[in-house]
Length: 265
Image (cartoon, rainbow, N blue to C red; front, side):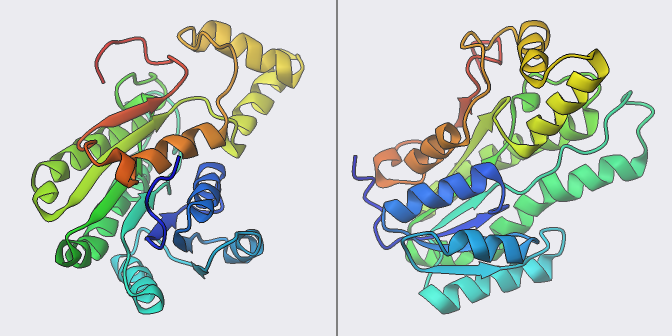
């Protein structure tokens, strides 16, 4: 399917991450030009060299508005516009009893998982409004609607992010900017690899057995009985930033294998 976004310019944060780079690959194949950002700039530039399109790699700290503004400005200077923003940067944050994690733990997740998206919107929306076309997608999580008790810092920041993007969607659509979220769950990434390695050591079982037991005990809604793949998340993102997704606005698209056991988001 031709997504009809050839020559659009897409800015992707967290681009060395599995989902970020998988999305970059799909959009490159669709003919988009890319502005890729991450703090791991050496790794990013190495990966980006394999992409079949024009790419600008920039290191940016998403907790700093000036850095985010510079990222957007350099992207526009290079390519003339930024049409699509895909914000994947984030952390899992501190875990533990919700009343025992510290103020600093909550604030760290808030700054990286929530306020970073506010900063990205501030930096990119004015130019998209002038052009009359734009796409803004943030990665939330199943945790935004199905919180897990020991992940309060992450849960609250991601829930706020989902509400913020929905909030934006009400007014930005009149400027041609569509705002949506994508909610993955238990995807094959470095983060879930680390979770399963820790689980396998604690239980004294193999990595695969740790995954199997986690699915059975902690994610019974995933009827497919496997982790998702980053390419599956990237395909969903590519659809909603495209012209093919031009009537999708203010939505939360789950890519979770059924992990969230509810009808509504």
